[in-house]
Length: 124
Image (cartoon, rainbow, N blue to C red; front, side, top):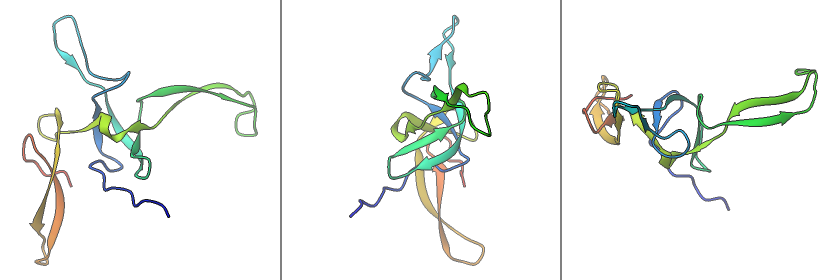
């Protein structure tokens, strides 16, 4: 029997910042931090991984097919572990942790929403 995957703090369409790995933040000559950002294209909850646009690019050898008659080597994104990603704060554009709280909806029911811990801004 498969283990039920955990809920993740990242969803498809979120803008995330890579915190660890080959795309981790670096510093320029002035000491300013350079962050690698990208949009989440797909989430794999069972593997605790996410596919992020323009991050963790790998080269893949492809044999000729009808779609690609030339074949050759293509570059594509590979999944990144969720623990290496942080959500971008909508207000400050910095990495932030994610919190959850219940907000009363228009019909009076409580709705669970995510918010940025750094600024308190609602995410969804």
